[in-house]
Length: 342
Image (spheres, rainbow, N blue to C red):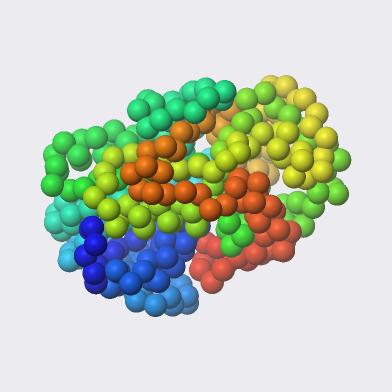
């Protein structure tokens, strides 16, 4: 897109955690002329220069070419995390729906595609040092989320060979949090029966310290800024996005005022598997396995080529998110609606 003024940008998954931050930033950008947000359920939220289109990517009848025609770029963010007990359903939305997006980008002649990949696309890697974007992206095959993200990396390899005229950017962010996504993420990962007020530090006298549980986090608004910068440049390829410091039991213990207590992986996994099997916990033990194996990411490329820097530390991100959990925070879209108890 470069510095073209009056650009028309289409955003899929525009009402979710990342989508709301991206749409808000683009609606405030003087170089963007209009934003078309695609979502299954159109919101009441009305940011400047933004229109909405109701689209279900899982539907073979969705007219994506019509929505994409005339666009300067498509930012593809749409993703379904549930149901974790029926991966065929998420496959239809996440993989087949994404392939429909890629095909429609090519058919509509859109010159740029920015795709939301993830740290979850990476193969198991080190926790002691960070890897760059050349690390293999084969995911952890037992976890549906990682399997789907990795499969789309291969689909994009093919897309890139067949459509060299389309500028393709793959964003690979760490775990994304913001205050407004707290209620949604509680429902997705903790379940609707877990009240947000239970996230108070005084209710956590100790914190499980699980070997391998060292990951990265990022404020969703910081990720959105990377998407915006990618549109305003000629950059292509993959970009790691994460904030410092890495999140581990020591950091969380300091944040929550709780004492880390060593817990074997097998004990933690058994508890998660039991709760998931009883449908008390939406997050699957397979995703837990993947998280323990994710590498830490080096973000030098994003800093040098996009001039991107995380404005929030990982500690600040988690502090804000915990406040959102306690208060049942949300926003005026269906995925992000606030909810204190269920």
